[in-house]
Image (cartoon, rainbow, N blue to C red; front, side, top):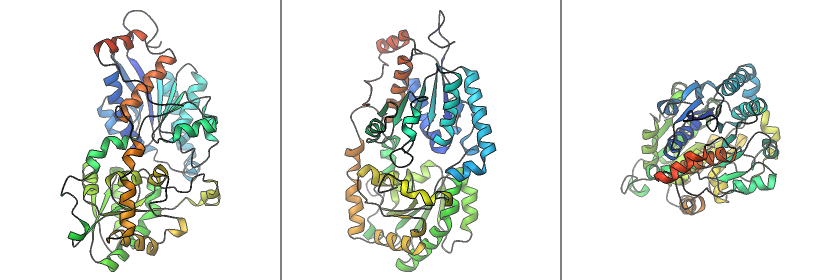
Length: 419
């Protein structure tokens, strides 16, 4: 029985959340907080998530580290394990009879759960938080999402229009969660000394947040760092490591000729961002973090071998998220065979010296706020509002509770833009 059914006080509004990796735990935790702020009645969360979501009261069925997949090859090699977990999570969602399901990122995992739930319980609304990159790769996924996704919550401003063009499900831009972290990403006055004033510039090394990325990039990044120090002298190299990969990273660092300082935890990571003068990073969300932090960057990525023949299918001129958002190739990127240590080192050296390469990136990054921002609440709060709107439209949210919220002053703002 849903929260909208029955007499008397309803049971807690129950949301099943599917998270497949560490970044999803961060998104999911902020969404949980915002939903509790906006929903005036009792609310319960069940599903898969990490330590942040557990601390907020999620009843966990799986932790993100148990999946940690990226790309087709890992799906193939771990087929039995991954699909067993997909079936288990879907069965748990069906048994829980939630009022609504939220799929957070990790589409290779979460969308398969969503398809099973929709097939077995078509009355349960399903919201996808973080659009798959249909604008860059496998655009045919967008129309295929229509049968099992009621609404997509997009992090990037151009994504709703893409879903219109591709005939996908309704899509709303709620804003990127990094917009909520600008205050911790950007240095306070004097926190990042001028490049010209330091003997040892601070260089961030970011080889990725997934096991496969780290395996492919640690060796070229280590050699690139050695070449950089030979060219310009000592640098203060800092490597922020996600906790579940820290041991793996430290083991691979033993072969590096120049040893960076490894830091763990979000606070230490952002402290390093605020001090950094440049970065060498894997492609991913981190490129946008660095851009918002005002850190000139060089991006490298090595695609898994099974996908290299299909790179021609990419629909965008850049795989760097900050470039995609800005609509211009500002941050240099080196893919596969081009990501040789000598090329990476040469580009990073340009950024560690005053000059055009460095200034061009900084000027472009200064435009990000106007490109990504919009008037209104934080992205997580807007995402929570859309979740509740979908629930109300599908008839699983009691109108009386929404009215009560409006009367108490806790009602959410008008819904964000959507197509």
